[in-house]
Length: 232
Image 1 (tube, rainbow, N blue to C red):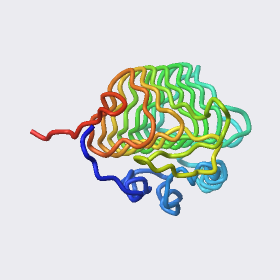
Image 2 (image 1 turned 60 degrees about the vertical axis):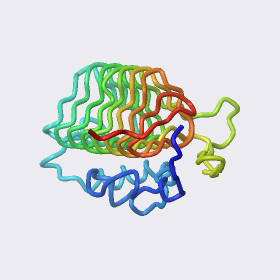
Image 3 (image 1 turned 180 degrees about the vertical axis):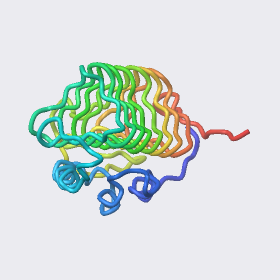
Image 4 (image 1 turned 60 degrees about the horizontal axis):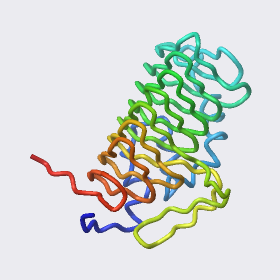
């Protein structure tokens, strides 16, 4: 592993995500670390949904707001009673399961047989094939390959911590999947373990098991083998 110099600042909301690339930006920018927002996503989406223009958004069922320019497959399912917003030009494909408390950003894609719960997708993020994304935030133009999973609950049920080098940062959260920065590429069938934080511009190799913090603009090959991205 290269000698990356990482600090707590690297985990902050403003380091992982560029401003104004999500309808949730003003909300998220009020938190030092983005996972601090997870317990408040539901209330935020309800509040934002109630403010949306009826001329632009349809409400096919209570607490579900879908922009009229979005493409939604007739087989997509939205959980009853919980808040969901689908922004302009987003695409919700066949058999997507949007469970609860989800904001899908402008131009974002939720693909076939994907399941989302308590999630914010920034604009143009893509989870296109057989993905589970729970209690997570995915940045602008981030992309999950087929079968990528965010594991949001530890096997022993204890609270999730974020690992930064040898330091453990307590989150106070039992449910916490992954914070994925802008322009991150995650290869097929990778698993992001509870509390994973992926810096902007990083690439995760297929079949990886990711824990802790992956620095920005790096390539994660496997645990303890993270290299700097070389610009040519």
